[in-house]
Length: 312
Ligand SMILES: NC(=O)c1ccc[n+]([C@@H]2O[C@H](COP(=O)([O-])OP(=O)(O)OC[C@H]3O[C@@H](n4cnc5c(N)ncnc54)[C@H](OP(=O)(O)O)[C@@H]3O)[C@@H](O)[C@H]2O)c1
Image (cartoon, rainbow, N blue to C red):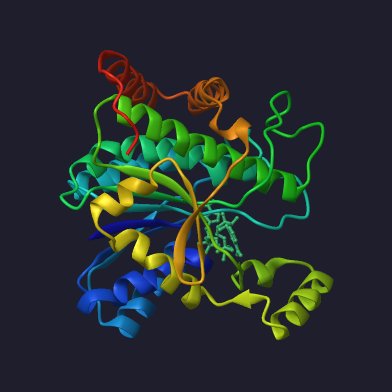
């Protein structure tokens, strides 16, 4: 399997990258995407020496800049003909104040959602070429809402609301991708969300204020966290399971309980096709990129020209 992990330099992404790199006699290829070359290279070396897997590489991409995302897309596409899996994971957590990206968007919206919306669309044909059946797993949590009239949160901002808005946006995005790709006749790629059932002790703990860190430490004593390696062990099977099983998850919101993957319900607004389309169109406008729009339009045209395929 060849799997791309966004935000693979820390936390859950690193845990998943390491677990996948170690599996099946270290034969899977892992591409780590992150914003820091230094952390990227040290993560690759660390995982290589821990797993003896030499099939690891790093793609530098700062998701806070759409220009950098486009450059990274070109790099991936120039080097790889196909992809078997993508983990849409990178994300900002705690922030003391609202930050804007170079593209003028609130950072949580762009980093956690929009840039990865653009990235995913540009990787669809690589995923379709997967012999194992491509899959895109979105790291999501339940809850949240879209501030439709203030998506950039200029009037009202909190870092929690920023994270949650991006979570809802990702859930709506995989729902629409599933829907459109099935109608377009792609019955090989799966798109779904996964919620880790327990909080992961990630790099986030290092950047939260001292009082929050002290509380987290107490919670950790009582077993309230899992490590990034435990997270990786829980999630790795999602990238390695057979195509038929993966396709059954497509369009759904999955979690893990007692060692089994189970579906959880999502709120109606997330699967509302009109709202999904509204967010899709806003996202395309914000990407403001002809190639991204062309890919999106081609998918919609294919979906409209085919007969609807019953959900798997
Ligand atoms: N921890 C949990 O319990 C939990 C539970 C559910 C969902 N999540 C979600 O999981 C995702 C990962 O969180 P985490 O807890 O593992 O946090 P983390 O340890 O801080 O890892 C975040 C990853 O995203 C990368 N990243 C941040 N900004 C970026 C940017 N501008 N461009 C490219 N990469 C960027 C980070 O890179 P650097 O190494 O350079 O910082 C890091 O690799 C987030 O979306 C979070 O909301 C976390």
